[in-house]
Length: 254
Image (cartoon, rainbow, N blue to C red; front, side):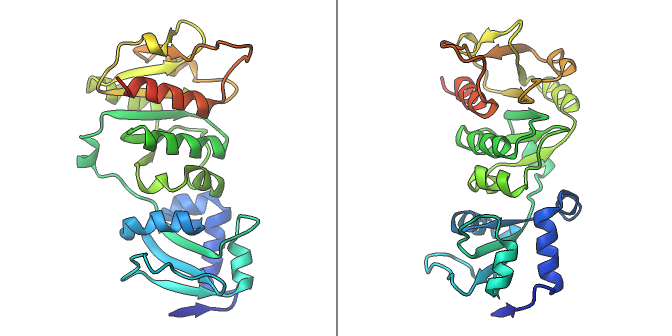
């Protein structure tokens, strides 16, 4: 097993850059995960795992299938430099971002479109919820937090390895979806229908918007129908990730 001792090692420098610089993640299509649960989810998609980094105080569980995967031992100094959590478990993985093929996309019928949601924790929670609700893909629009930010990855709890996550122009995506008879729902306080009164559709896209300003007006003009979660108490609004979970299940369950 290969071992790295120096924080000045070129590979360690690359890992650190992936952790701290979004442009580097975008340019290389790579990212770093931390912790047993995330690494376990990653190795179920072996083709996405480039390297597993293991500290002196950690070990690979016997139940894991790590055949043909590169495992590198790291010392405590490097472990601390890579750790994004206060009490690190000392196991990391260097991964590739998944790329959905065109033929896969033809079979998608349920979409979550995210417009300029800026909190990484909210993005991660929505990715995890979309995965749980059986959504086929998540599309991140301009202004949204990075899907591969360490906080996003922790919040999503491994769902990055279960559901395609794409970046794109949401207006373009809405046009393409409507051409395929996918019903597009926006979320807004005005001119909206309570979600439980909406006629269900086998193919749909839900657009959710920025925590403060909501969905941009031009996108709302493109939707087929705008929906809302009724507020029954005195709260003025719901957290965007909570509202997204309610709406996705409301649109999915019959």
